[in-house]
Length: 328
Image: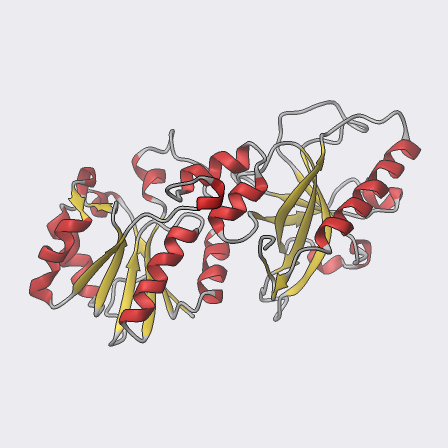
């Protein structure tokens, strides 16, 4: 898959899905499904940064994915090209007609697919229903997709906002039901205090600045190391136990969000190449709240129970490559 940060003509016979694509949930996948039926090549056209981060930074939500995570999901879904439009003050000030002519007509896809609630242009004054009229003179067709829901969860409309609410409340299965996969966080491995190794459960300590984490506690999880310049092939996935929040047995309670992960079938203490590298962690099930233990032995026993519980839970979940999916 090619990632393009320039506004230039797409290959012939390309259908382009247009939107913010925060999280790449089931609604976004519906756009891809329609686009794939309309043209042999598939592009995702989105914005960098997310428009809310420029227009209302004090109210902008924490995003559900990093750019790298979104690119990996696009590749897994068969997207041929990911276009990151440089969203700056000049683009934010464009009228809908100007955006259609200066940006979309320059990309020149065969067709554009958007959600029925898609808004664009200055003050979000452009609508999906008007985009077809603007692009018709340029020979670009426009199709819109109705909102997608999840009947089993009682959700009539999948949205990134609703997924964030589920993650923040620790409703992992509900979030997964709207995403079409377990919710994941990507962080960079840093050196920790080494307490996990001393306890017999070595962990990778992750820096996850501005990432949306579930509530503090211990979780059954899956971890993987994505392809990087130093790791030519993805490593993992591995079943894991993840801990969100401080370690109250060793330190005072804190509001600082932190994430450390123990790979159940991998001795992390023997892999020094992970420092400074990204790790992706998928949250599958909450095991217990964060608590303070009376001593080392009580903590070791509790972690042992966490590992056993996580192993049992994860044995019932299927993995597709490095991309875990929800239970059937």
